[in-house]
Image (tube, rainbow, N blue to C red; front, side, top):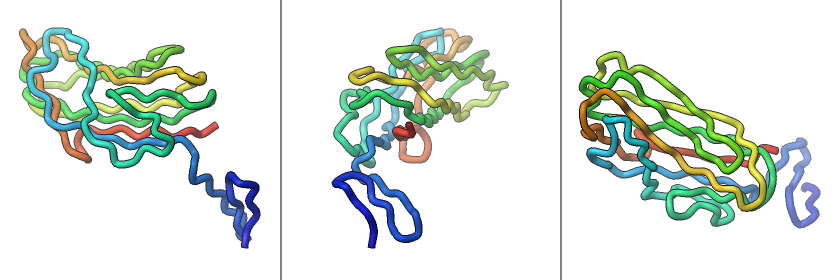
Length: 156
């Protein structure tokens, strides 16, 4: 048995569940020749695993309520070649959270960014991927559920 008031449920062991808590998990399909010459590319999220609250659309998450959202994102770059720097940015209405890394000569590498993002009602969040040093926009994004993905959870 548990207590419910039409929202979260606390069971007899003290476990709290909130089945309507805003959350989303998405992953990308392959995207070719998107960056490499310092082009900021908006990652296209082609597939939803789940979207509690229907807050994710058109490659953008829109906060349904004000709060703190835990965002975990990974983008796998391919054909990095002579890329000298890479940036994976979580772009939200209030601020941008940057993650920089040198791929160190790897042809294929995963880039991660994790942040607790403060969002107000109707604020948006998208992801930018930028590589530089390849001489042209020849860097690809490897898609698939485990290669390029993002989860968003309202945590506070």
